[in-house]
Image 1 (cartoon, rainbow, N blue to C red):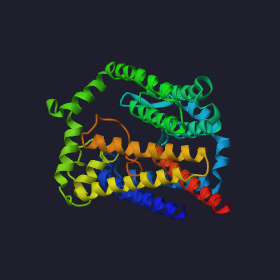
Image 2: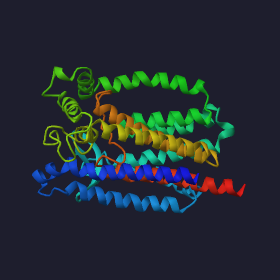
Image 3: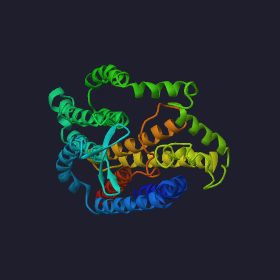
Image 4: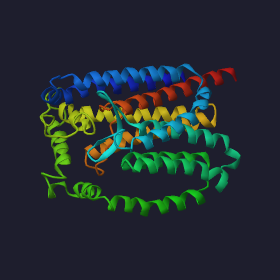
Length: 367
């Protein structure tokens, strides 16, 4: 397990270092033009990184059994925050979505708290109720109620991408824990029409799907962002145009340092750069799954699995959006995109993985 911990730590550090370089490269000109400080986003990214490191060090310093005591209080706090962010004057609205709290020059996204808290809660409940896991009322309903509350409040922001990602992670955790397919499949099937209604009742979501199917139908409107992403990736070729030399970040590609940073990597570092990122995430997922398989108990197994799936799913969705493989969703590229809350809680997730590996190793040595 020590080797796995070391390898996971190294992969994460490489991804974070990649992020530091690319956040500055993708945002410097934009920040200087509008904020008169080319390092504006870099400095804030480093502050979030420092805060994430402090939180990660605390998680790694205690046995993960100790963390269980804080799961329910943190989950309750996350629900309160998810409700408060919807209140005008408290939550900050950007582009029609109310997902953030604003503190001076910093912002905070409560759905990131809920994401990690819910994964830990589900892992805790399923590990304690293994004898009742196949019961509808005692095994299936408790995690479903909490999932429904979390997804429901996140959808009100609205944030469909995060809500769907959380639901997928929880479903996988329930399946791995031994939940009956007789309970899971009907709910999954019944949720598809609901998802369709959620999409079809919002015109901007329909436009995103149409842009995904044929962005050139409206190249100056809804298809503009994905077309500019194609241009960035195509311009990079095999070796890229050079670090810092992107043209698409010159106010052509919206979200160059956030949701579409992968496209800038492709333009500046080429296929070699993007392929390296994909390989790093594949290795990260592989190492995380190995840690989950070797964990000392069911809680550690499910918690590690949930964290790995969440981070891996966010990476797949972000890369899929940038390459036009799936419709646009506002999810950052883990460890690389500029985004304070996501960076902090992704780092906390990695710390939890390292913690599970650390104490599982000690348990194996004792036995």
